[in-house]
Length: 433
Image: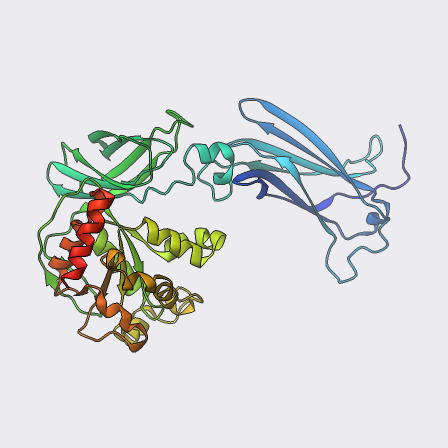
C-alpha cells in the first residue's frame, strides 16, 4: 500500500438534485446531478481526484462509483475570480421512490491509522408527480402528464356531477366520492379512447359538499397501477348566474341542455383584457353553463413553444366547433384596478393573439360555408373597431343580455351532424343573417 507524506482534506459541501436530459423525441432520462465544493485550504495542493459512490436501496440494491480526476495540480486555494472550486457530475440514473446514499472522498486516500475524511448525503427520489420525475417514461405511461382538470359539484342531496378531460391512453375510469368514508362510486367506460371532456353523475349516500373526488384511470400502459387524481366537491351554480365582468354583477337565466359531449370552443381575446378578471370568469361561464371545452393560449404555452403560435392557431381552429372573438370594449381601467401591474398581469403578454388570429381566419369570414363557426362576444354595447370591422358579418352577442341565446347557439353546435348536412345547415344559417 502506497504511503503519502501529505493527503488532502475533506470536501466542503456535497449536494444532489435531479435533472432531465433528452434521449430522443418524447423520451427523457432522469439523472442525478452531484455537485461538490472543495475546501479552501493548503491541502488542496495534494488533491488529484474525487471519488463518488452511490448506493440505491429499493426493491433491489444498486451500487456504483466514479472517479473524477483533476487534470492539473491546484496552484491556489480558490479560483482566480475569488470563488471556491466547484465541480459536478451527472451520469447516475435515478429510479422512482428510491433511497440513495451518496458518499464522496478526495484522493489520495488517508494513510493507514490516519483520519479518512469523507462527506456523505442521503437522497430519496420522488414519485411520478414530481415536476422532474413526471417525464420518466414509466411515469408518462402511468399518466403523469395527463391533466384531467377535474370539476365536481353537488347537484342535489343525492347526486354529484363530475367533469374531467379523458386521456387517449385508456377508456375506463373509476370515480369515488369520499367524506371520511366512501359515499359514492361510479364507473365510466367510453366507446373509444380519445381526449375529450366528459361528465359522470355519481349517486351519493351522505353530505357531499367539501368531499374529495378521486379519479382512477385504467390505461393500457399501467393497468391497475395508474396515477390517481383528486378534486373537491363544491355546490353547483344556480341557474341564475352571477357573472362578475367589468366590476358589475349581472344575473340572467337560461334553459340547460344536455349533450353527449361538450362543444369545443377556441377563445380569442385582445391582450388588454385582464386574464384573471375577465377571461377566467368567461371560461368558467362557458364550462359551467354552456357545456363547453375551452381552448386558451395561456393553458397551452408549452405546446405553443413547441410548434409556434401560427401552427397552434391553425390546428386549434380546425379542431374547434366554435371560435369566439372576445372584444375588449375599453376595459383597461377596470383591469388595471382589479389585477394591478404585477408579474401575473396580462399586459406582459408579448404575443397578442387577437390580431394574429383575425388575420389568419379572415378568409373564412368571406365564406358562407365557414362563417357560422365564428362568434363575436362583448360585454357592453359598442361597435367593432375599424381594424376588425370584418367581424361585423359574424353573429354578435352581448353578455349577459344575450346569455340565453348565446348558450343555446353553443349547445346546439352542429358538431354531431354528418359533414355534408353540417355544411348545408351552416350555409342556410349564415345566409339568413
